[in-house]
Image: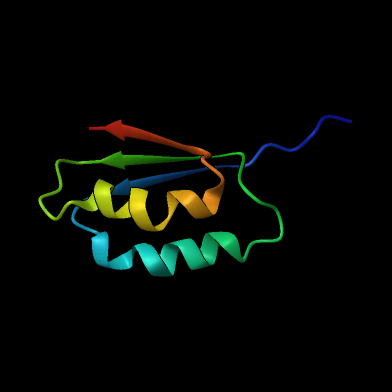
Length: 68
């Protein structure tokens, strides 16, 4: 039986204020993600910087940031 891999893909635009809620939801899952991919669409609110500072450390570095 093969191992289940869980990846979360998050498209985002100016969503810095929602990262705390999102990270709480991700951490509360029974099965933890193997990777989280954030696709930012030219945000003007330092979206990726906030995500990196507040969320990435909680996900054990399983983060891939992708620009639009």
